[in-house]
Image 1 (spheres, rainbow, N blue to C red):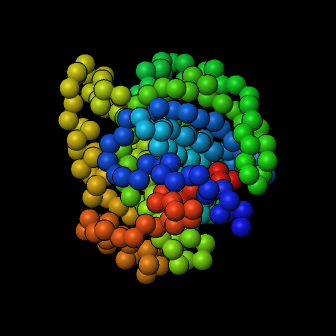
Image 2: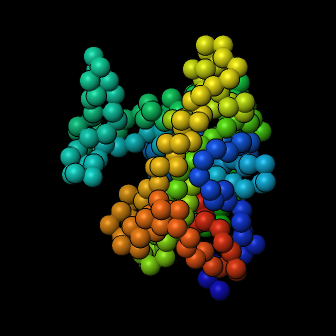
Length: 250
């Protein structure tokens, strides 16, 4: 039995596998560096009320590369209301968008924005292949609750022959556990409408991961999802009907 198959045993049904609204509890939130220590990233792991999980990883620091059209650009930011990009290939930059998403999560969970980043503690996380790795735990976020919204994200196995139906958490549209956006909270509302709009958008925004967008099997699977078509389980190891395992944050 391969190591990949071994890690899938007993994992049936453990990941959130439907799009839309989810009431989530944060189980892990930590900052981890890449192997060369240059590109830290923020890893978030959450559970819903049934113990099903959804993860998100955001790069805190990145390198300017080429977009899908081959143009060198990254790090979008506004200048006098006009979208502007860094355009020096290979240049490194702080990912302001990801930092802003984490700040919004901090506030959505009811934490004081003035204390953003306070309470971070040293810790470790153990990975099947990498072993034990040092991390910085964002301890104040642990066990905090919020409402997240996800969309289908189709990915392929390494051999490009098997499709997975994953869920992608939209970190740009976070809500309190009561279902309010931060703007609605700031305006003193007790009932909101933004969540309904976000769920509607999520259900119409199924996509394919960037590297697999030309794969015919992935395109066919996306069409099934968009048409609410019923397809065979995409993960059959040990009888599982789960989505793909979370990617190693390295």
